Image (cartoon, rainbow, N blue to C red):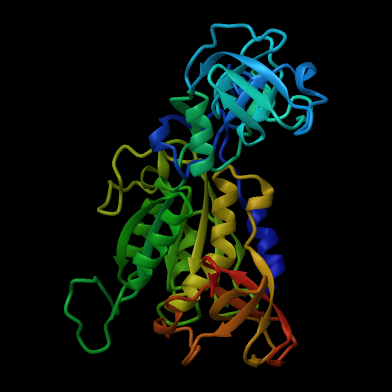
Length: 440
């Protein structure tokens, strides 16, 4: 049984990131939010585009006002008013000034702004009551960005600030990585769909919805393939179809040691290389990780099968597919996704190395944490930022891997290391963020 760190190293080593040349597409800017740049962006524009004023006031020559004060003011003639969006018409000469507003273009001849609070105006003249510093409140052309140099780097995930930068640079379209496709299927005779009446012994397939939501949040395309019964041949057909159309396949259930746990044998029969069978983590011990190398044509043709209800027609077949057989218990499936699948998905999508791994923060625990010490344990709860320091509060109720209810609203997973059975209240712990910290 592998340690968490060993499993993480193996999984990330198996991921083949999307190729910037082959796996890219052009998208309109309004369709690019959340997408990852597949190449550096440059602009033909300087930022600022021209010298401009950072304040309301008067554009002057520094030499005219460098020694003035309230006791020895300087009077200047106003040659024009320059609002935003206006091209100055006059050159500011000796003894002259131009009324200027924030963001407006600096007129020729002027090199400094005197803020209006340090002036008095009477008609077409202004009296300067305090000497400014040289080039005060002047934004120089290209001070923020010089045309032709990299504006945004490849691998950057586009959020609101980056979208704003691209819009300001008049980039109507950008080249981004394609979104990875993640096929999701659930296994088990006991599973029913969300709209099906429950019979004794049946449970709703919540994993399909949870995993699809997490995949979408990670910027990938979830391909929901539904529930597959505990029949080896049906599972083989479904898994083969999933492998053929996806970059990553997520199945939940069927990876333990029960009488109906067929997944591992099926993966081997389909030609998969199995790299992980179990991990010393709680919850989430039964984790199967395999890879498939495929030629064009896909798994269905290789098996001599016709397209199945699980197939998506006309889907390109990837050459490398990473398979995760997740535990069936709802909490185990989610914790395993957060700890192992999401980092792999982020690496695959073209993000830089700094963005791959889970986010851990140092926090104090408000209650004692307990574990049996045999596996690295993850206890879910609520992470708060209080006076600049993180605090962790354990979720109320039972922490069984089958109890999905008290996972709702959780924002962190507290880590109890292998060999440790008790962490006292007030002690420092590592917490993996699974949501935004709350402030109060």
